[in-house]
Structure formats: structure tokens, C-alpha cells
Length: 503
Image (cartoon, rainbow, N blue to C red; front, side, top):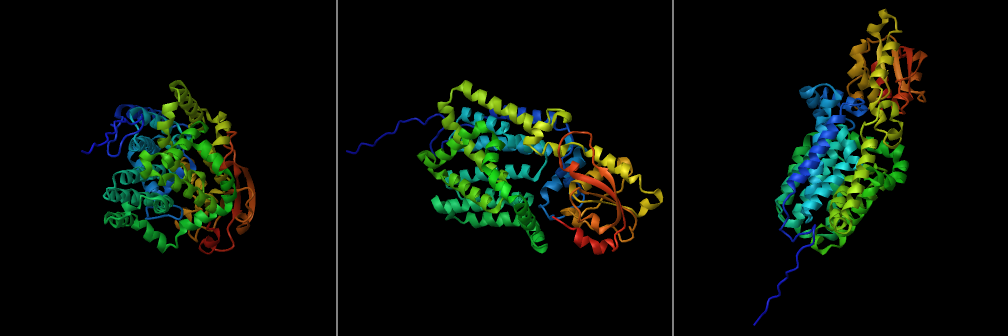
């Protein structure tokens, strides 16, 4: 007679057996998402456009399958949003709000995928919604906003694949990767890290399915327009990435760990550390142990290439979701609530425009993206004052040339209010949109960084109009500029343009 052993041990809070996921905490997660959306919406119209947002809208007016510095998705979203909802920061940032709400919901689903019950899902959603990176990217429409959502979505789908062993999930993964590549080719780092980790620690059996090549083909088909464009243009985004590494690589490497701590919240460090340990050691989710390996591989890649710290943050959101279950078990509820509340308060002040622009020095010192939203109308007004110093008879042949895409895009947005023509620039996508006509052989209004001597040296008889004064004591790239009025270049614009191009 054989006696079968019965295992009557119940799963701990925050865990479940394979194939027996707890119900999704629809109500609590929806409440967190709604509160996040309400906060982001209430503050989305404060300050003003970020320099990148101004650039995206101009890029959206030049639709293409790619740009020097990015694929087409974010510029298309920016232009569609402003066309449908209005040409203002509030309307533009609806897309960013929706993407970050989707990120929070996905993090809660990741906690569920790893066995987390309703309370664990709720806490995971709260931590994601109050993290600095989610709040900051939820306020601005940036390529990183869509990128963050794409990374956590691919991670969720990969976890579902690993947990169930159902190869058909490769189809959904392929769609998510393909769309992600149309936003930013950076998602390839996630794919490489996950694939190498899968080969190192398994479970490798999920690769033995016909759905894998089909999913890969789906990703390539969706990404093909931008990949073809990039190949035809010599893969310019790699050149941009190399430039970032060369210019900022040392600082990026030195600041990687401190920024990883700050950009979620120092209070959340125990959560993602516990999550990394749990993902590696917990036998109930052994099928997910490739994620801490992938995170380590990604950190190494970022260190070697001198990339930015936020490349790693989506995988830390996954680890944070994994770490909520053990922390919920041992942390006292008042301590947990207090920790999330403190993180929320600090991150809201640092990441969102709750303070008036005149008091934005402190958050700007911690988050430089704050300053890049302040002073653009005032900057363009000063450009308008300088433009009026050009004799009216010469203005038909005059050109405004800006060193940086942000200044050129701000003139595109606010310049008509001051009677300004569109500005030209050799920076990023502006370089591909062409030089001024050679018939524009009149005065040149130059806007360039004060320390840059190369640009004014290309023109004649330059005279300084003055530095930029936005009226706000907040450091940003706008204030690094000066305005000069110069005579025409000794050569035509078409001959000069290759020299003025820069990434």
C-alpha cells in the first residue's frame, strides 16, 4: 500500500503556487493610479515646456522614420497630442501621464506575477507611483517615459513566459519590443541582458519553441522602418550615444550607484535589495532568478559604455515589486505607510513643479530637468529684442542661428508672438532639416554658449548683444547662452552647413 504525502502548507502572504495567481487588486491599484493621474494632471501646466518637448513638437512637424538622435514614436506622439488636445504643456503631457499610470499598473501586475496578494500589489503600486523616476517622467513627455513603460511591460511578459512555459508569450514580447524600438533603440540592452541571463541560469527550456523566432520576426517587422532608416543614414544614434559616453561617461560611471538610490528613493532601497535577493534565492519563484543576473549584466554594460543611470531603473522597479512581499511580512504597517509618505513628499517636491519658479533652485539642484522648463518665453522675448536691433531693411535676408536644438525649438514655439522667423541650428535633427537658403546673405543673429568660440568665428563683425536673462534665478542651459549679431559668413550657407552640424 502506497501512502501519498499531502502538502497542506499554505503559501505565505505575497506568494502563490505556480499557476495559481491571486486575484488582481483592481480597486486599490485603480485608486493609486487615479491619484497619480490627478496629481500629474493638476501640475502638468505649471512652469512650461521642457527643451526636449519643444524639440519633439518641431520634429513631429518633420515626420520621418527616424531622426539623428531617436526613432520616430515620441515626436509623433508629441505632435498628435498637441494637434488633438492643444498646443500647450497641459495637453502635451496627457500622453506622459497615461504612460506612467500604465507603468504603475504594470509594476502591480509584476508583483502579482511573482505571487503577491492584494496588499502586496497595492504597496507595489504605491511605491512605483511615488518613486522619483515615475513622477519625473510622468510630468514630462520624453523618450524615457515611453521607454520605462516598454521595459517594465517586456519584463512582465517575460515573467509570464517563464512562469507558465507557454511559448506563445513570445508573440506579445515581440510586439512590445518592436514598439519599444520605434521609440528608443535602448531597449535592445534589456533584450541582450535578459537573453544572456537566461542562457546563464535558465530556464533554457523556454527557448525550445517555434514561437521564439516568430516573436523575433514580429519585433523586427515592427521596428523595420526605423532600422532601415538608421542603416541608410549610418546608424547615427550610435554616434550620439558615443558622444554622450565621451562627454559624460566618467561622471555617469561615478554617479551610477548614487543616482540609482536617489532616482527611486533612498527609502525604497531595502525593497529592491530584498527583491534581488528573493528573485535569486526563493525556490517558489526560481524560474525568475534570471532577473537579478540580468540586472547585474545591465549594470556592467552601463558602466563599460558610460551610459546613464536611468537605463537600469526599470529593472530595479521589477526588483522592487519582487521585494514588497517579504518587506510587507516583516515591516510594521505604520512604518511602511510612513516610509511611502516621506518618499512621496520628497519626490513630489523634487520631481514636480509644486514650488513657484522663483523658489525652484533647490529641486533644480537635485533634478536639472526642473530648470529646463523655466524661462523659455522670456528667452524668446530677449531674442525678439535683439532681432529688432537689425535694420528692418535687412531682416528679409537675416537668419537666426541657434547652437542648441532647445533654443531653436523655443523660437519655433514662441517666436511668432515677437515677429520672429524660424531659427536654424546644426544640432541633432535640425541639421537634417537643412541650412538657410544661400540667398539669406544678411545679418546673422547668433545664440550660442558663451564659452563656444567656434561658431562666431565662422561669421564676420560679431558684436555682443548680451547674455540671456530669463528673470529667474534658476540655473539651466538657457542661461549659458549669449546673443550676438554678426555679418554674413564669408561662404554660402550650403558650404558652411557641414561644419556647423553637430550631435
